[in-house]
Length: 164
Image 1 (cartoon, rainbow, N blue to C red):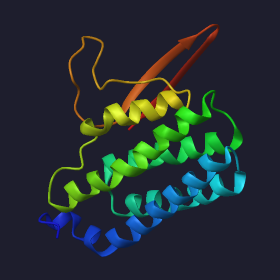
Image 2 (image 1 turned 180 degrees about the vertical axis):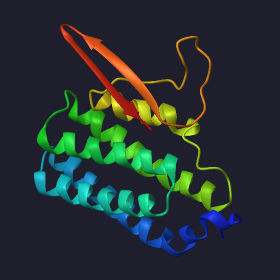
Image 3 (image 1 turned 45 degrees about the vertical axis):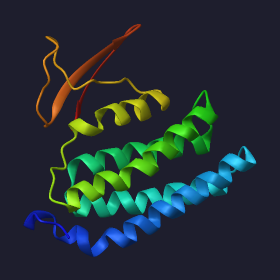
Image 4 (image 1 turned 90 degrees about the horizontal axis):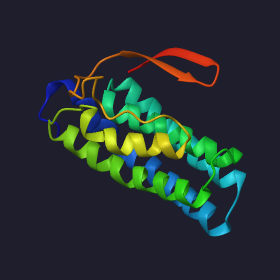
């Protein structure tokens, strides 16, 4: 049971979250065995979308961010937008298997901080073709959780956006 009053609702939905994660894992397994399959990845995405939505409603920041990136990776796998589908599938499976551990920690009253998940989130981002961030500023010092603005420059393009 959650020891922190702010996360007591997690106790109510933890079983349903695990069921959805199990469905996502089964769908991903089917996809990997077949080597393709839009229907399997759509099922995986649907289950991840349910998990993500529940975590948003619970106002959990770190686990929500991880679930969001896992859902995006599943979408990229479904549409064939990743270079290495086997590696992307393995990365997605790793995230699906690690997410319940983070939820267990929050349920025990530990912080839902983003920092412990940054390596996995960055791996998912990299596999999806996104830029990785190590959680440090330009001077190499670790920054606290929050909303950050970034500027990305490529050949002829400059993009300014925010990340949470």
